[in-house]
Image (cartoon, rainbow, N blue to C red; front, side, top):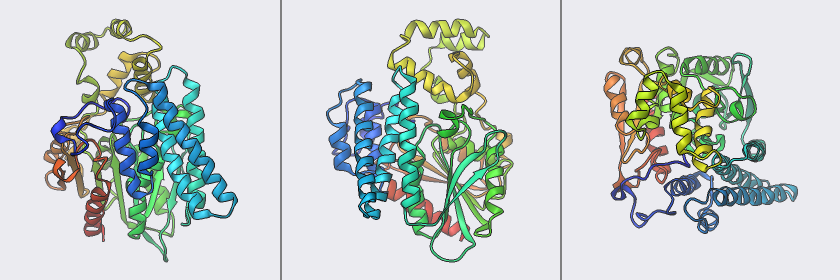
Length: 415
């Protein structure tokens, strides 16, 4: 969740950046994410600010171009470094390029030309694949069976003989797979964890290349992931953990209600009802139309307020697309209501669970605490405050602090 980020209260923004890095709230959030991921090699603040600075609020085409041009430039530099034998530089630049192009993919969602998104995504994945191949660590490419469309993944292995304790990184609704690596993958590998990243249904390659939609019953995703991992001699099946970011704050707890082979789990943040971020600003009369069973009237009402080629309409289509409901906005709003965790389901969670709770959570405020209240026997709530720079959804400017806290807890819980 990036390009349509709500504006958090100013007192939650870290001084001296209370004015933001950009006047557009969504652009500002992207810059915060990009800078935050720099601590694990996902960006370089100078080139990020140089690219983002000239773009004005609401200039969605300019925002896309800024990230695409930066990503393609750094990708070219990475390829040149590889060609001249500077492999460490090449890997570092391929990773940065992958992250920058990941932001370009999200920015392309606000453009009327759908082909631009797929082209940009493929360039992003070329950069990511080049990083994986040249990162200097052993990496096993793993294909996870899942219906008619297998899920692609990569298992990064630490130095030393296995079997290794293994951390599964579960993506959210729209984050680039390279950002999973710079969220928690790199610091986890440095602590001796094997790290598995993958695209689930509705995520990245599964959506853009194959049209596979989200599903609410994420146990049907993580169960085959666990099966694929524990079948390997280099994975310690007794020391498996899973971390879920953004919308995976719903998916991971939902999976834990059934899939109980994980020794520990972390969600950043906790989510018990995905639909609240969709309905928060929907007028009451539109909710009534939806609840009254008149999806055509709902769609017509929305179309009157959204010009088809506007950035807002393009973004709405992008948000609806992973739910696999076609062109109907009303169908998407109804579909997202299935992404809820009930108290009865939560009672089945047996896995130790760490829940992050940042100040100023924009998308699902209060839901980390709600998830903790639903799982009191197994969960712990970890606050991240504005005073320590940890405010906002997924703590964009506190990635070192978050990684240290999460990995310390996993070390203590899993061993």
